[in-house]
Length: 229
Length: 218
Image 1 (spheres, rainbow over the protein chains, first blue to last red):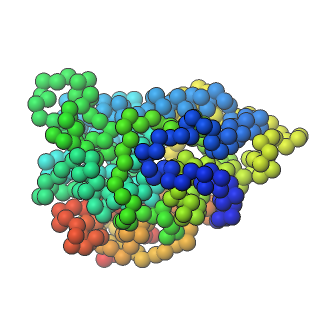
Image 2 (image 1 turned 180 degrees about the horizontal axis):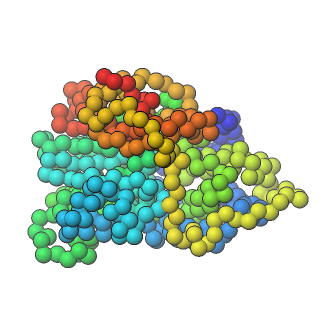
Image 3 (image 1 turned 45 degrees about the horizontal axis):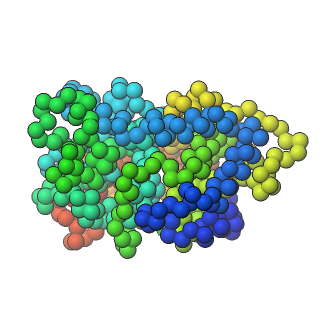
C-alpha cells in the first residue's frame, strides 16, 4: 500500500479534528453548511486545480451532481416495485434477473451492474446492509442516506437486525425469518416489499406512492402506515 | 485488514439515527467531490477503488470523520499517487508552470446520462467453479493486512452456498493492481446462530457474497 498513516493525518487532520462527532450524530444541525469549513475550501481548490489542468470539465461536474441529486433516487425503485406488484410476469423476471428487468424501465448505471431483488413474504423479511462500507443500488435508490453508512447501522444490522427494525417501527413475527444481505461483492440488493392489503384496485402510479426508500432497504414495510402498520 | 471499517457485529455504537427529509448531499462540496471522483475515473488513470485508502485511515479518525470527509482524504491520496497531479500542485492549488493541459475525459453529454461503470472486479473469464449450490462451506480464518471483502464476523463459520454469482477478480490482489485472480463469487447463507450463538433468532440468517479463495469445504 502506498498510502501511509502519516499522509492521511496530514491531509485530513484539520477536517477531522475540527468537527468531532460529525457523521455519527445526525442531530447536530450541520453547521458546516453555513460556515465554509475546511473540506469546502479544499474541494474548491481541488476543483480549480483539476479544471486548470484540463482533467475535469466543470459543466460535466454540474451534470453529475444534478444526476445524483435529481435523476436517481427511490422513486425509480418505487416504479419497479409497483410494476412487480401489478404484473406477475414482470415480477418473475425481476426476481430472476434484477438488472435486466430494472433496465426494462430505463434504470441502469453506476453501482447497478448486477442488481439482485429479494422478495419479502409473510415468512421472510429481507434487510440490506454493507458492513464494510456503503454498497447500495444507485440506479434504483440513488445515493445512500447517512444512517445507512453509519457505524450503528453497519455494526448492528447483522448481529441484531430485529432491534434495528424495531427502531424503524418494524416488528417482525418470531416465527418469520429475518434474512440480512451483506453486500460484499459486485452484487447490489433491492428489497421487493410486500404489497399492502387493500390495494387491489390501485393503479400502478398509486401503488408506487406507497413504496418508500426504507421499504426497499428493508428497514420498513411499504404502505401508508409504513412499518407501523 | 482487521480495521475499524469491518464493523459487522460490533457493539456500542448506539441507536441508528435516521434524518428526516435528508438531502442527497449535506454540503455543496460533497457533491462536487463525488462528481470529481467519477469524472477522474473516466480518464482511466485514476483508481476506481477508494476503499483501500479509506480503510487505511487511522481508526479514531475513521470514526470521527463524516463519510465524505473520508472520501476527501482518500481522494487526495489517490490523486497524488495516480500521478495526474503532484503533491505540490495539490498544496498550492495551482498547476505547475509548463505542465501539459489535458482534455477532460468525461463530457457533459455522458455525465448527464448516469453512465454505467462495470466494477473492476466483474470479469467474463471462464473459470471452473470449485463449489456448487447447496454445498456446505467454511469461511477461512485469514487475516490479510490489506484490503479484503471477507468480514471478520464470518471467519471460521460454516454456511451453505446459495448462489453462484459468476467470476469476479479477487479484490485482495486486484485493487493493488497485483493480479486479477479471477474466481467464482458465491452467495453464502449463514444461520444467525452459527454467527452469533444462542442469542440470535433460530430463524434468522445472514447472506454474504464471498470469493472462492475465502472458502473451504466444510
